[in-house]
Length: 176
View (spheres, rainbow, N blue to C red):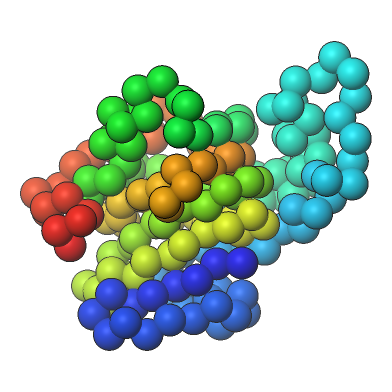
């Protein structure tokens, strides 16, 4: 379950309903999906891990896609063994925005999205399995892997071309 920290005050929240209510005025969607269904649904022989994950969560993907206009979904996985992991992470850990929503549902592992709220403050959202986060288009944010450097997510897109990062002049996330 997610943990949100308001960067300027250090205040944290971990209750899913409170997190959803806290992030909604900033345009960020937070939901919890039942990740346990993945463990209870055996993967059929010959079906890839990615296709199995998409199949298990097809009802949730269809619901949110219909409501928000998403057209495609895929699965991405990052681990310490991922080739060029540092270069991949360097694309995410700088302040940037996209011209479409950045939507992630965490299946395994964890990571931290920091979003600049309407109040100008950053909210660090550490996402865990079962957390769905939709960062709206044009919202400044950054993403970092947690210490174990492992995450597997379903990504949803309106148009993959809109997911290009547009970097701002802000310092890297470690600098604030």
